[in-house]
Image (cartoon, rainbow, N blue to C red; front, side, top):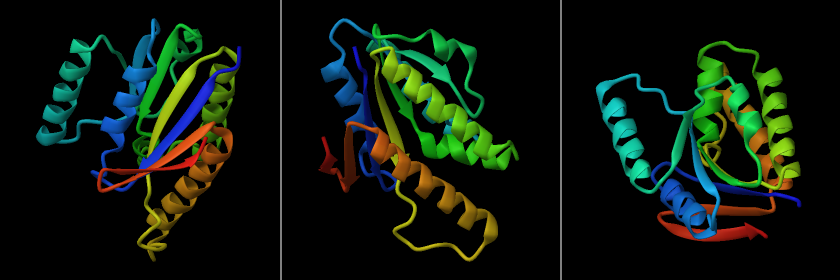
Length: 176
């Protein structure tokens, strides 16, 4: 049984996460909903936000796995009895760059993991931000980040069965 992959992108506060969570809950059936969270609590506001999100998901039966950058071995255990939401790949990439980790190598590992999940019959929903609407930044670090995220998003659109973009809460289906 072949799995499915869904990309949900859009700007900051466009409604991506709510749309993704709703997508998972409607598609869940008898599968365990897994939330892969990449946010890191650098300040008090982010700590509160993460705790609120964990609490909200716990009430809906989600299992949360924190993946700020390294893909844990635990992810290899998932199969067609799981439905996964990764929120968000943009934050994951940011964390890798800020920690000066081998970004190209880690993107390859991510792609391999997605192929494996698909082979195991899983549904995976990936949230990503759109950061290129404002143009390429003149600062090298940010321009590199934009390039990497743009390339990753293009690969995800090609790889995924469905692709959605949110803008001000409005949903545009681009693929699938």
